[in-house]
Structure formats: structure tokens, C-alpha cells
Length: 469
Image 1 (cartoon, rainbow, N blue to C red):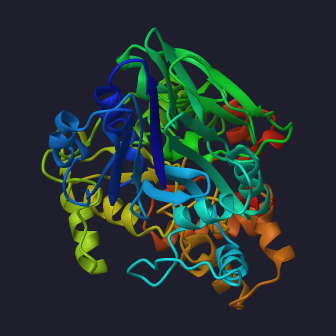
Image 2 (spheres, rainbow, N blue to C red; image 1 turned 180 degrees about the vertical axis):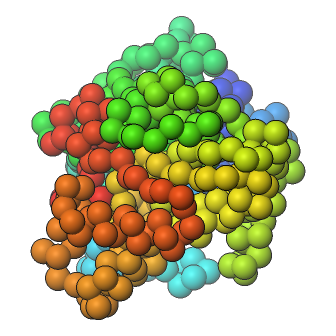
């Protein structure tokens, strides 16, 4: 995943840029970068590896040394960015969020025109560089950006820093957000709406699907009007979004409370304690506790002071051990207790099984699991989520293959398992619960989850749960 932040200011923008970008640290763990421009100093850029070091630590010197009234920054799980480009459009810096499924096809067409790309260490083309190359095929920025949004299969939102201002564009189906903030000295553009509030900005507008604007210290001008169709990612509310974020005017924290409330309405057990898996499961669990009347508590705490999220060895067995080591038990709240645990989702199931075993070892009598979303059946093909994986690694798909005796069950069979009222779904859930050693397992229903957002189903992307585009 990734997030970005941009500032166009009548004053030096680096302070706002530094902290606005830092407020996106929950969206990426590997690379971060800042690029600025001023008439006096021109362009300047810095990129650092943040895998085991917080953004603020790595960019502390740049926050003092960089100068400029225009700037963009990003946090990324993937490629190093922003990148600088020199073309017939002039010099500019660009940062992107999204996923390009037809990258090789587009690259081959561009290479045929005798354009070359610098490969990343894994041999792939930097997707942000590819977007710049697409834009450069047109006569001006606005036509180039519209062309990129049109031909890319997957998703694309971007910021482009030029000497005259910052271009901002939201994905053509609005799969990821872009919001604009305003204060007396200028404007900012961000992925997360909360990221500018403590910097003195107020909400100005949210870009619609496919909308393109140019931002200067004095105004925000729309260059391409938004489209009517939207498919924003529902998982942003369920898991990726920070609790203080809002998308399409819907608060992440409120949506998660709603999820927990609706899960509780359909449940029929009475545990001693309701708890959320830190951190994204907490608000879901509070909603469940408030609706059910069962006490909310924290039977285990995640130790975070010296354990950055990205500090994980490549060896899977060590990864599982470290994930378990982060959890510190509160034995008085666990011993001989029946616990109901809410996590945002179950992907492979490995980590939640480790957590459940940890609770049993700490004295729990029962551990009931209530994921805050339906079984994940399909790998995301629209966003570069770090949780995306091969479909055969998904616990739900593995169980379906076992139940059907078929490594590639037909799509119509998989569709039967996505129906929460079907016998196949009930068998699948029962088998997953057995495999992961849960006392009981009950998933959130898709219709209830959609209701929790308060948005019409047709405006939400639910592909990973039902495979519908």
C-alpha cells in the first residue's frame, strides 16, 4: 500500500510536508520520500529506507535543510518515490498510489518507441516511472494524466510537483481517496483526511473519481471533472484506514463500531469478555460490546515501543514467533475466561491461530473468533495491498479446495461458498474454525458490512469477498 501528501504554500512548506507525510506512516513500511521546489533553490529530493526506522527519524535532517513552497511526499510499501523526471513537459517530481495490472503491455508499447526504463532491483519496471512515461506521451500534463487514468488497468491516484503548482488526480473509479485541505497560507492534498487537521488546515474538498486538479498557493482549479461511477475499496474502512480517517464522509472508527454492532446483533453466545486484536480490531470490538452488553477488555497488549510493524525476518517461522512475541498477556483477564475476539479479517489464518494458541496457553477457557469482514476469497487486483497474496494461500480457498477435492474449483462453486446462508458456506466456516483451533467462528456478513459503511453497495469495491468487479 502507500500514501501521499502535497503542499502548495505562500510560505515555506517543509514543516507541513514533513508531518503531513509522516501521518501516512500506517500505510507503508519500506520506502519514503520528499520532493520540494522553490524559485530560489529549484528542486530538491530525499528518499530513505524506513523498514526498521520511523519516518521522522530518517527525515529529521531534511525537515531542517530542505527549502521550498511547493512539495510532495510519500510513504510506500513498494518502490522508492517520488521520482524526478525531465521531459518535454519540463522538470517535475511524481508520486503514485495504485496497481498497474497491464504494466508490461504498456511498457512494451512505450519501449517500441525507443524509450527505456530503469529496472528496480527485482527486475521490474518502477510503476511510478511507467506512469510518468505514459504522461509524457501526450502534449501536456492534463492530457497525459487523463490518458494514464484511462489506459491503466487496476488503479492510479497521483501527485505531480511542477514549478507552477501541484497536479492531483484520483483513480478513475475512486478506489483510493484524494482530499484537499485549506488554510490561510495555501492548500494541501492528501490520501488521509486527518493528516492535515493538526497542521491548521480545514476540509476544502474531496476529489471525485477521475477528477484532476492543479493546486497553487492561491487556489485549486479543476481540470477534469469527476465521473459518476465509484468503486472505493471497502477494506480501507475495515483495516487499512487510520481510526481518525474518513472516506466519502464516513468515519473509519464509526464504520468499525457499526460492524461490531451488527456482528453482535446476529450472535448468540455470551462470553465473559469482548476484545479486539490490536490495533484495527479494537473499534470493531467496542461496537460489539456496546451492542451486546458484554464487557470490553484488553486481555493482551501489543508491545510496540521497539517493534516497528515492518521489523520482520524473511523466515516464516521466525515471523510467526515475532508476531506472537509482540503480545503481552494480562493473565487476570484471561485465566478461566470465555473470550470473544474480533480481528479485522482472516487472510492466511496463521497469525490469528498463533494469537488463539497464545490465549489458551495463558489460561483462556474458550476463544470465539468474529472477523469484521466476510471470508476473503479473491486476491485484490486493484490495489497494492501488502496483505494481498496468492489465492491458494487464502485459508478460505484452501478449505474450499479440500472440501471439493479440487485444486481449481469452478467459479460457480466458489460463488456458492460466498453466500452466508448456504450449506457450503457453513461447512467452510466450521472447517476453518477447526483448523485454526477456535472454540467457534462466525464471519461478518457482506450485506451487514456494506450497511456499516452507510454507502450504496454499487459505490463500494467488494471484489476480495465476492469476486464481483
